[in-house]
Length: 525
Image 1: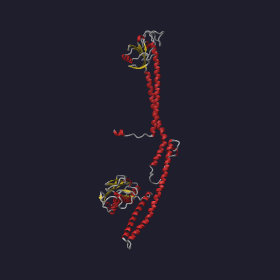
Image 2 (image 1 turned 60 degrees about the vertical axis):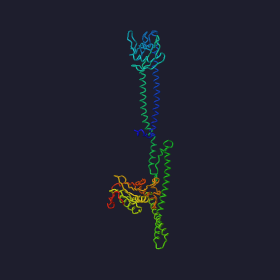
Image 3 (image 1 turned 90 degrees about the vertical axis):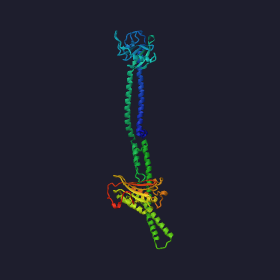
Image 4 (image 1 turned 30 degrees about the vertical axis):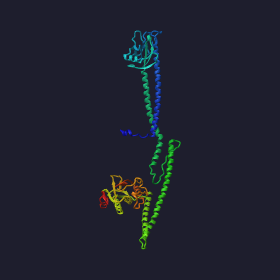
């Protein structure tokens, strides 16, 4: 329950805001018009009812038998103060009452349409009930106070007016207001229904019209989305998609957005072309320089070794200098080879793809690392019983393992345990190759940059064996060329480099002989 309360709604879309705003405005206008119409109609209807009540009140206020001729409506002269109730033309429910000292002494209600009474005919009125009389007494309407609305039991709403009667009495005259109330209720119901139907129609039409009006904006957003999904950080620069000229008209608001997006895409395209040209020149320079340096470096190594092994007597300093020249030339040759490989991978050189079982590759790489290492590391294998094949270049995959193992051997102290494992999930899931060590770990500030070229660690991972800083960069480049990815996680005592490679689409290569694989479960080498 708390999660539901704390969850916030997402922002409304522009279409929703426009439609809701328009419908709300129409609803407010319709409510104002309906209210004014209802108030005006009510005043008009009650005004007519009060005019009719005034006419009846004037007849009721005349002294009984004091006028000449018959009463209006054809009723004969009478001394009865409520004789006006029997006059023709009063609606059913009209009444008259005589009040003396706050008490109703006489009352009469029109029970049927009044007609001209014939001599000796019964009156069309009947006395009011006790509840009705008590309601009139409780109202306490003084004479000359104007018309007032009163609800009477069994008679509903009535407009009542008091006039002075004979002998200090008060005569109350009432006309039913049910028809007026019914007309007002009908008017309000019609207004509500018409307004509701109009709002629904306005909402439907608004959604359609706003949708049509915002269609160019959606196309612009779709263009921006497609451009944002392009791999602009690397690779060849392709011409960027632009907003059509029909939707980039600066005379409209949406067109201004489209024109601004086209200008921005033009600037981005120019920057990408400049970046591509610069990278191309750098790659070509690195490739040419690396290729040209291979020959003189090989010559330097050869002449240094030839001189050191010659028959001429050389002093210890000279032999030491020649040895240093030879070792540094070898190290420089390795760096040149790495740079040349990175330049070729950056240029998108195709790899030699074939079905490759990772287990023999892992065993060979770990065996080489164990033979090359002289620092007392412990090497372990964790391989599955079944072959795990990927579609890739076995030479480059072997180089990935060699670089990862060299990184673990070089940057961890003696006695460190290095475990290499291969994990394959069912189906077409990626194959995972992990190199784990229990060394001191990678410094947190270096962890995001370990795959960058010439990245250097601190003293805990110093390059005692002459690392060039390109090994992990080559790992990432080769794995990326295989459509995979490489990840690293490190805490003191637990560092893992995980290489994820796409699995072989179909089982292709046969299993290698068991004698080449050995025990595949946590086997030390």
